[in-house]
Length: 127
Image 1 (cartoon, rainbow, N blue to C red):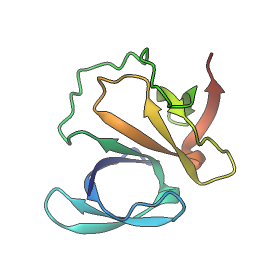
Image 2: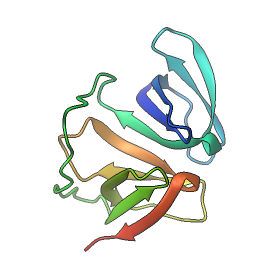
Image 3: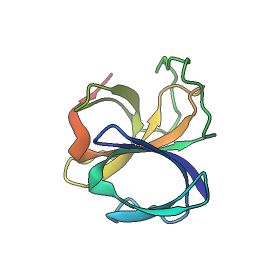
């Protein structure tokens, strides 16, 4: 099971765990913190954050200065809601439903992020 935090395109946040998320499928299930199981539709999501723990640290600011060996190219993602994240990817494709990003801050609570292309305003590769 993967511990995840989902951000929806409407601004909602859903926390729990999943065992059936697949990047090429449009739906998956999340077991919520209260034990209920909910179906999620990927096209309605902004991103799926695979996290170390559900609590996180809302006061921590990511620095995005770390290098991830074997992580691929460094990329800056700007979502339609204005949020910006920086990380590394070996799988970016604008033609797919989404792709994985490894944050460029090893101290982040995020292990990896599945970015949903429909929620992205801009992608820039950084040197």
